[in-house]
Length: 82
Image 1 (cartoon, one colour):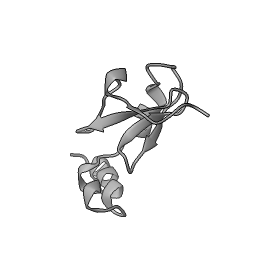
Image 2 (cartoon, helix red, strand yellow; image 1 turned 135 degrees about the vertical axis):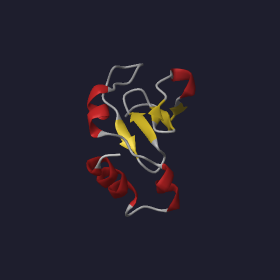
Image 3 (tube, rainbow, N blue to C red; image 1 turned 45 degrees about the vertical axis):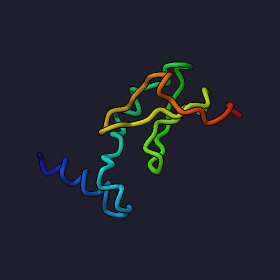
């Protein structure tokens, strides 16, 4: 692992609880590329729930082992968009 990758990895866990050691976070470049598969709108990262959230669709897509699961059937309903 490069020193830059180690630094990024360490910064993700420095101020968080014990669960954060397993949470690699989401690369900001990935958030620029990924869109909601339902609405094609932007996603936001919910660090506490480890999910990518589409407010437009009212869905939260899980991140498992560092990989976003962008399937409608796997998404959690967070309510209608406001």
